[in-house]
Image 1 (cartoon, rainbow over the protein chains, first blue to last red):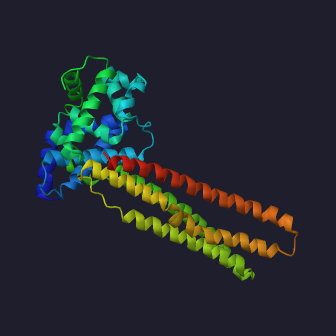
Image 2: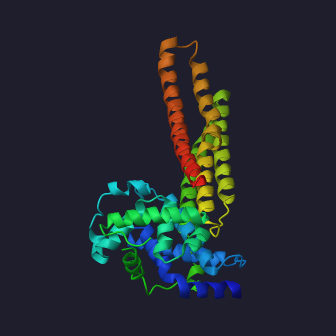
Image 3: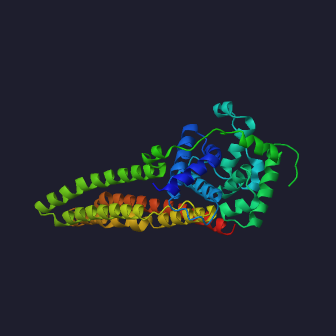
Amino acid sequence: MTGQQATLYTQAGEQFAPAIARLARAMERDADKARDLEQNIHLELWRSFERFDGNCALKTWVFRVAHNVAADYVGRHSRRPATVDIDEMDTLPAANVGEAALAESHALTRLHAIIRTLPLLDAQVILLWLEGHSGAEIAEVTGLSSGAVATRLSRLRDRLAAQFELPEDRP
Amino acid sequence: MTDNLQTLWHAQAAENAFTQPDDLMQRTSSFERQMRRRNLIEYLAGGFVLALSIPAAVLFASIGLTGMALSMALVALGVVVVLWNLRRRASAEVRRPEEECRTHLLAQYRRQADELRKVPLWYIGPLIPGVLGVYATVGFMAAGQVDLWPLVDHVGAPLAATLAFFGFVVWLNLRAARKLAAQAKALDEA
């Protein structure tokens, strides 16, 4: 363990722990497995801080590690439903309001269900946007161009508005 | 609406904290646990085949059935090659989760597609000589002692079934590899 590694880990924990928990819950429906995924992200972050070179912001580093670990997790587990393109989101069934919905609001359960059916990169873009990242920050984390992020975000937000049957708001 | 969604989103997990570093020291990731479990199953299966094929090779050699002994030795050698390949491939994996998501996903898809495409070479291929050897030896031993059709029936049909099974496994892997390659292509163009 190095001093820098411990400092960065503490700093990241203070700033981003809730966001990492939200990411894990969005990617894994089962609460216990989501907690396991969350701890995996903590572990990978801890290990990665040994390599942190300061070439990007701590926030960018943390979200890259977190999203990549989550993507690896999804890639190894076939329980994820078949992905649906953004433009086909209208065909999505309404979220199954079962036991999980007792613990979460209906809207949140639906949002999680939609995120889990998106192609991984789209899911990452929408999750980062939900966390409040700017287009430039999303581009830096995902590696997409700013233009590609803007296009995806616009389509995703339009479709989300349609899914939640609420009027379109400002772009 | 979007502001509402972001507010709703941030209301979750507001009190969560990171796992203590001391607890992380004891922990292995689920990826590592899964790899260990998979490798353990593969090694146990390989060990089982070796435990059968090596004594069988010795037994056949001791009673003068050289062809069968050689075939069993080839089966054992094939299993050793597969286990060695498993170990080599597992240790070659380098994890760099801090790279950009698109790059990471692209690498993940390409690596998986590549592994699946090579399954016939590193997983099925090494087992083929031993299996064919067993069938060939039985066929040669029976030739001249039984008529052609019973021979085809008793050796040809199981041989065809075995080859069909290997072919099916190869086809499944190549199909999955094509699917992953298509996903990688789409991502590359994103």
